[in-house]
Length: 218
Image (cartoon, rainbow, N blue to C red; front, side, top):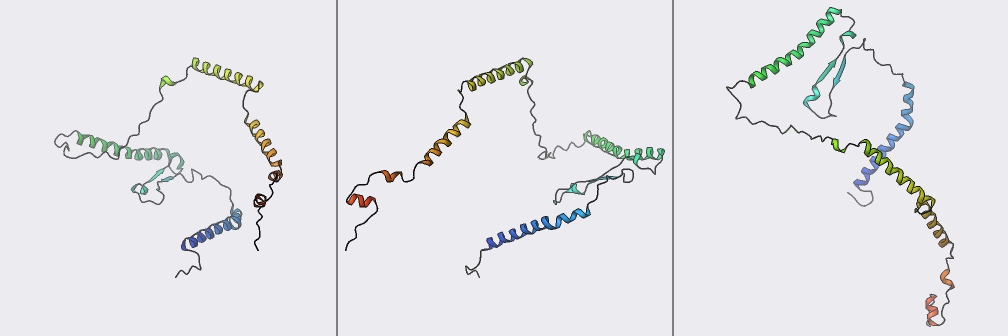
C-alpha cells in the first residue's frame, strides 16, 4: 500500500535504470581494462588451410525463411589434396547446379508455351513488385565550358567588389557590431546603481510616502 512515504513506481524504474548504468560504467572502468592481458595479435586465416568460406543471412533475431540459407564459397586451387584432373572434375560437378537451373527454366518456358491451359482464370499478384523510379540528370543541365568561364568571371568580379567595399569601410562587420554593443553594455554597467537617489524627494506626506515611511497612529 502506497502511503506517500516512498517514491512512485516510475521513480523506482528510474533508479533501477540509474543502477544499471552505474554498473556498466564500473565494468568499463575496472573490468574491461583487464582484457588487455588477453590481447593477441590478429593473424588472418590461411585460405589453403581453411579454403571454405561460409556466408549466412540474419535478420537480427527475426524469424525469416531466408535465414536458413547458407552459401559456401571456395576455390578449387586452394584444396591441395586434389590433383589437376580432380580439380577439373570438381568444377564440372559444380557446374551441374547451373545446369539444373537452366533445365528448370527450359521446363518453365515449355509450360508457358503450352496453349492447352493458359491460366487465364488465375490472377497474378504483383503487390510485392515495387519499382522505384530513378531519375536521370538532364544533359541540358550540364555545365559547358562557356558557362564555367562565365561563372568564374562573375565570382572574380564579386570578390573585387567586396574588396573595394572592405577598403572603403562600406561593409557591415559583424565583429565590429558585437564590439560596439559590448562597449555600450559596459558603459551602462558603469552607471551608479543609485541613480534614482539623485532625484530630489518632496517633503511632507508625499515625501514620506515615496520614501516608504508611514505615520504611526497612537
